[in-house]
Image (cartoon, rainbow, N blue to C red; front, side, top):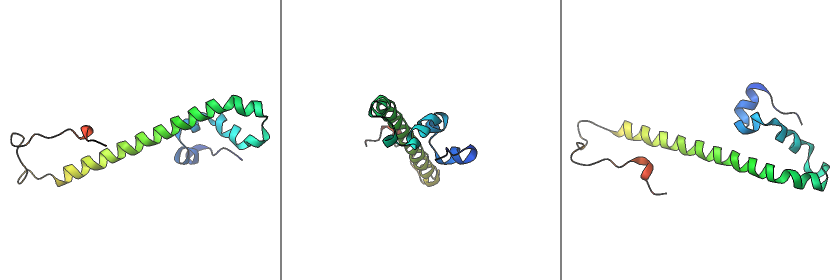
Length: 98
């Protein structure tokens, strides 16, 4: 299996995987083709890489959700009918309970 190159790789694959294409190469060899000792030696690196990729994806999704929330708040704001800052203090969005 060939590693996607150029714009395709950037659009499809996580940035960490694009930067560290050797992981992709090892996986495409297929863990069944590697010796058990090779698999065990690479497992920790692969696991940590997977966790990093998932954390990056989660952070990106959370940032997009925050942007959407802010856009909804901005769109819904009306200077004519909204409370004045002295009437009702705004709560920071990042302190919302999950």
